[in-house]
Length: 226
View 1: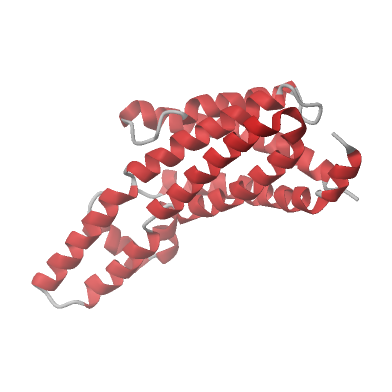
View 2 (view 1 turned 90 degrees about the horizontal axis):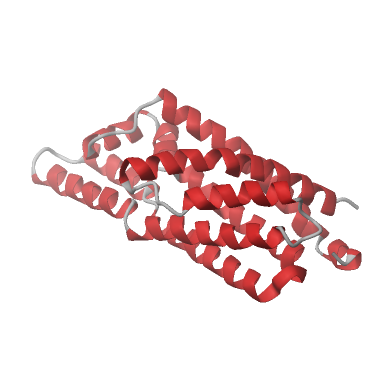
């Protein structure tokens, strides 16, 4: 990599380093919440969760995964500047696909819809009003992990695949880093909504992705230094 250009984008690498650190903190906390507390099984249970604990409701409704995806968008920018000398055109395609996936995920998330419906449900009088709000909640939950969610999973798997392959040809990242990214990309191709296989692949992808994150964070830190 041209050192003068590396210095030019130092602020991008520095911000991406801190974004990666926040992401690496959120992931184990999210897993711990999922292990310790149960995901609501019904619409009313979702409403009750938000009533009893807004923070837990946000965790289970994936608000913090949404935050992670915004951080990943910043990380993609650092990938772009550190890998564009390898194959700029292919990298642009990969990054574009990943950003489309992130946008799809943001549009699919229903955290604040469920929070608002929960509040309305417990303020409404018994009868038709509650039934209408419950129906709206069911619609939100049905749309949450639908087409947009699956598109996010697959498109970001493809983006990560492109980025990892280009890392093998880069003098900035090691081949070990590229291999961890490639493993995460392979598992991410299958959406978590695809039954038991999807759930297993989703959980399995977290291990190589976490190691990958630790490794590229070190690169960002080095590139972001004065």
